[in-house]
Amino acid sequence: MRNARVARLLPLAMLFLVLLALPMVVTRSYYMHIVLLTGYYMLLALSVNLVTGFTGNLFLAAAAFSGIGAYASALLTMKWGFPFWLALPAAGFVAAVFGFVLGYPCLRLIGPYFSIATFGFGEITRLVFVNWYSVTNGPLGIRGIPGPGRIGIGPLSASIDSRLSYYYLLLGIILISTYVLYRIINSHIGRAFWAIRSETFMLAQMIGINATKIKIYSFMVTAFFCGMAGSFYAHYMRFISPDTFVFPESAAAVAMAVVGGMGTITGPIIGAILLGVSVELLRVVSQYRMVVYGLVMIVSVLFMPEGLVGVARRIFSQRRRVAAAGVPARRG
Image (cartoon, one colour):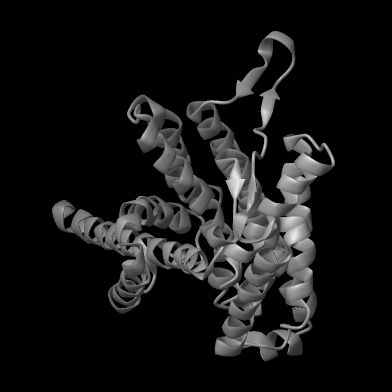
């Protein structure tokens, strides 16, 4: 059991070591900007994976919760003087409250009905951002959002004001978020997530699992991490507007989880790295981005339904079987 757990965590640990050393290779400011945006999408894909990959419900409101977190964090720091380090978790908490608001009426919705409900919530949220001028400044958005400031004490402190410092701040947030999600997924609550998948929802209720409580919990956790991602985005970009938190961003997060491998921790991270760079490259043809995402998801579902992680697992499993079959033959 312990060896199996180490085998699962080893690729993840190697991936984070590579990410830790990445600034040594990526030295240009623009490329580091793309890396930071990719990290933002990585947080969204990890969050979406909890509902879509583990409970089996297609979640199309990641951008909405990210926007709620971004606006909450901006308002907390600019109007009420909260420091970034308090506004970051507070933004996640505010998004989690809205996750409860969305999760409660969606308790008995499954399949396409659930997806439509989350899509509708995303559109309602965007319209609130556009029309609530007194709070969100409407389509003009909010400018001049302060940065995180300094971290640490005395001579051991550092200012978060360069893209390199933002990168390591984001990497720390992703590392902590990944660990928390890993612990949740590998707990009895995580096993309950699998039990309440769409096709086994009624069965889970029959065997005594409180599907209502588990489903709301998955919503709130997903919303919390989306809200934290939005908070980081707001304080990094120093500007937010309703145009940022729209449906294509939610679709991108789902596509990243699907391509990398839903129902795994490593999959959304790999998917975000591959498609996150593509998101920036495709901004010059932004009107075709949804077409590209659609094609990528169709190809992924048809030819690698378990994503890139599933393909890698099959290859390694096949090699192990070949190696195991070859040992007795050589001995003979």
